[in-house]
Image (cartoon, rainbow, N blue to C red; front, side, top):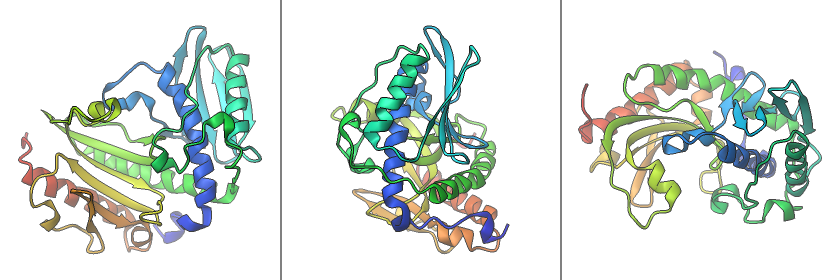
Length: 297
């Protein structure tokens, strides 16, 4: 595929829109957290890439069920219910406070009894600690940038799914985490892992077992460009000395651990983007699981 199949999304050019959209996603994500039946490692809270954007998938509630979709073609939040109703909220032209009021009002209109927190999850990642209902600061919405962001997700989701399909053990879906705003897939060894008792409940559940995770994020203030990543928990000694493929990939120190990184720009300009991403995910997985002595079966 040519680079045109994977559009450019320079982080500095849309970071304000990314922050607003991230906060919008956390509002809807809180609804999913409240309604979806619990799954291990918080898999029940995630979104999924759809033919138009990102979807919660089906969520039951006391009076029926619904799904909520971020439509990044027509730029709407679409609510669909099991009694046949379809309602919409435009994504553009809203502050976070406006969107919080619009979403909660829509849920009441649809008969969905749910209470959600107004606090952004992990303010250091989302870039705001303002309660949703008070946030008149974040209003940016660049529709073209959001559309390109979705095109990237739609382009790489099948590659992640192909990588997932190689593994016969316990493996997550290819899903989008709204708290950290990244697409990810994780393989598990089947063995429990030690987690500090001082860790918060979210971390204790997420890191309760050995896993190797690969994903994609659009960038942040530390790494201000979109990139693919991979890491393993717990990290075995000597991981950062292991080779990665393609040659442009590298190990990035993250506190006392390391993360494999591969720039999206290198991916989209490679002769074979699909193969380059598969090579990256496989080499990082092999490095961690060989040193970690995962069960070969």
